Amino acid sequence: MAQVKNNYQFEDMLQKHNLKKTAPRLRVLSMMYSKNTATSQPDLESVMNDIDRVTLYRILNVFEEKGIIHKVFDLNGTANYAVCHSDCQENHHHDEHLHFNCTVCKNVYCLNELNIPRLTLPAGFEAEGFTIYASGLCPKCNKKSTAKTN
Amino acid sequence: MAQVKNNYQFEDMLQKHNLKKTAPRLRVLSMMYSKNTATSQPDLESVMNDIDRVTLYRILNVFEEKGIIHKVFDLNGTANYAVCHSDCQENHHHDEHLHFNCTVCKNVYCLNELNIPRLTLPAGFEAEGFTIYASGLCPKCNKKSTAKTN
DNA sequence: ATCCTAAATACAATAATGTTGCATTTGTAT
DNA sequence: ATACAAATGCAACATTATTGTATTTAGGAT
Image (cartoon, rainbow over all chains, first blue to last red; front, top):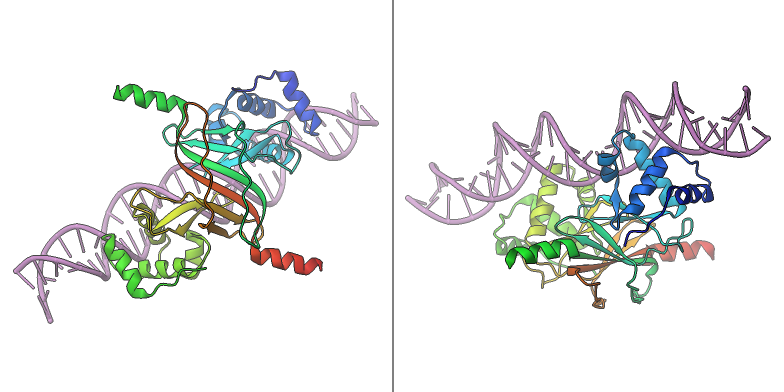
């Protein structure tokens, strides 16, 4: 599920967005692309504790601005970021997919494959973007809980 | 749009949930029911600055536990609370409606009237609840922005 | 009406998350 | 090799939220 990319591709991504190729940015990219779940600043900090907290926040912010990642809040209201599709452009995200927040492991999954139905809003409301949130058990935690009860 | 209730009804609500009828709680209920948008702790604090911050947090928390209100995060990730439907039970919310977050005034509207389509998730995922978020212009801000351009 | 007790509030302290300003370092174009 | 803009590191601060505890209060028992 996780998209596999090598370091050259990450360097290309940075260059394409006029961002300098720095070690912290490459490490963040590498980590985010190696997972199939969203990543928060605390997540990054726990792994890359030699990089300054603020630097991580700023990296996440530029990546979001550039359309490399998009923001999604988990059940606790903390910001998580997930890698975007290829069709995300700067300041114009196409993150209208389903975000699944596991109530056990707290991980946020982006289920891109599901296309969400367009909704008609009441008069006066003009929507720019939609996101669907679902919460429940992810495959991993689902397996664990059924294993226990059997 | 806002649900109109009087003080006796708020007292009944508290009694029904085995909560003591206190001035802070009644004031919070009164404020939340007078609006058609969600309310955050900062919102409450700015109006009821004689009530302790922590008290407001705790009131919001019990109300959520009891199913009187439900939590929804706005675009900034701050917790907002909106009054629930009558069919919300304790610890078992039926808040599967659309939350509309205005990008201008930042208000969160609960659009209960829209029923959201059931989605089938990929194998392994087991959803307990769904919420749809939309962001864009609310009727008020929509009117203002079109007024300007005309 | 008064008293009693559990519940609710106020206050103090602390934690987690996020932001801003500025000095220092670094990537990259020249 | 140099210079400059960009990025990082560090310090300080802001906001949102939580925990502990003393005090107050609501509501039932007497």
